[in-house]
Image (tube, rainbow, N blue to C red; front, side):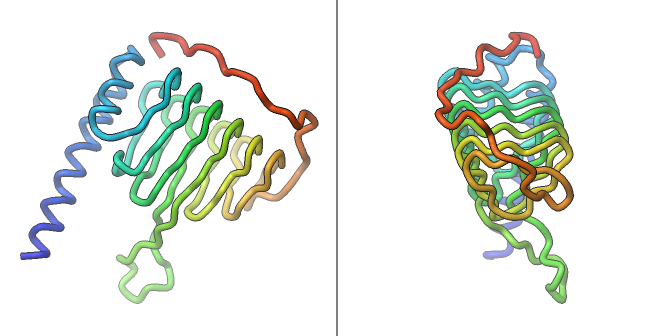
Length: 184
């Protein structure tokens, strides 16, 4: 009976994720934000998620205020995903907090760990954030980087796997990202 319950829960979650994917094709971000909140994504005031985003288990995803998430982003909520305030996530960014355990004999076991993205972080296009990573306040992830371990505050990382390539010069971050386009 427990197996049937887990399977029904998985089917329900797949249906929810499909509805969120369809909502991502509507070119009106107020509508998308309403639907995302309706299905459990915690979204702060003034934040927006651009078109075509994909979600896995939206109830474990929280997004702070004044945060912008670009087109085609993947937001994994199979474990906790916490995104802070004034975060700028570019297009095609993939944030995963679950992955196959390659050392498991069955290979079907997952390794899950939360991902935390603190305030004022910028993640460049096509970057990938893997399970268990914390991006410190004001960190910058360069385009195409694959982040496999924590990034300290105000640190700039790039490459595969991501390594430190610099630090932000401005230490007292307090900017606002501005308003997103209504139909994007």
